[in-house]
Amino acid sequence: MHIRMDWKNVSFDWNRARAFLVTAEEGSLSAAARALGLAQPTLGRQVEALQEELGVTLFERAGRGMQLTPAGHAMIEHARAMGEAAGRLSNVAFGQNDTMEGPVTISASDAYAGLLLPPIIEKMTEAEPRITVNVVVSNTASDLLRREADIAIRNFRPEEPDLIARKIRDAEARMFASPDYAASLGPIQSKDDFAKARFVGLDRTGQFLGMLQQMGYPISEANVPVHTENFLVMWALVKRGMGIGMIDSVIGDADPGVVRLWEDEPTLGFPIWLVAHRDLHQNRRLRFVWDFLADALR
Image (tube, rainbow, N blue to C red; front, side, top):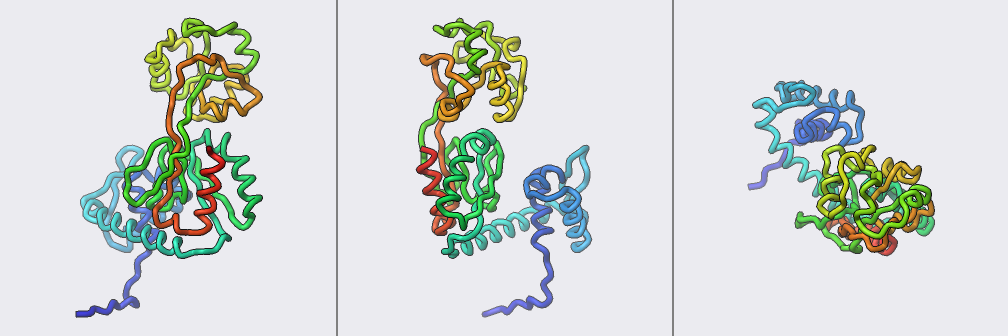
């Protein structure tokens, strides 16, 4: 039996459903607004409009966050199904687009977005000026299945079956410092020579310090007077002589404002992966950017 849908009587705004879904997953309006690239008042109005349209209350405030009401819990799985369907529809449509003209969104960490990608993007847009590039800067993995980005540069291999990945290289993080600060430390011949050195920390949780201690460096909290969770800020502080920083050696070796501290240091290795949605890889424009990035990042 064939059922014909009366589309004239269907009135549903996907943007409102998406606002509900992302707010539920992020736990607050502010976090959801950042995830969607919207102003928080705009997102709030979309959630309010959906509640008025459905005649139910979907959220209740919990401190600074938002918690689902029983009605919200009853709807969330349906909203997720809608989101997955919308993503599949978008991916299929994108995959059928054979034009080189248009946008491509690349997701990368702050270090790669700010220090590694700019010259690559410059050369890529010179080679194909019809492509416009949007760079999403995030130290967490963008959701490629929901089209938060078309291509992502990651340090881990994805497990989702709908994603494809290409390992670009095995990177190594090494210690760098400004020439003046490196000279003040004197010759570095062993880990013991770092006992009085200053480091620029990459978090306030102690994870960075703990990693160095596990590697055998005789340092304590006193050796890390400055902390930041942003690699670009860390790198700027390192170049000003505030202390030692660790970064991908490809980035450090290319920067004339720093020097390697110790050639024999034990390195911290990690992989670099290029990741995209399986369907999107059929798109000509995306395939060009994918191949360009793969060659340049090697």
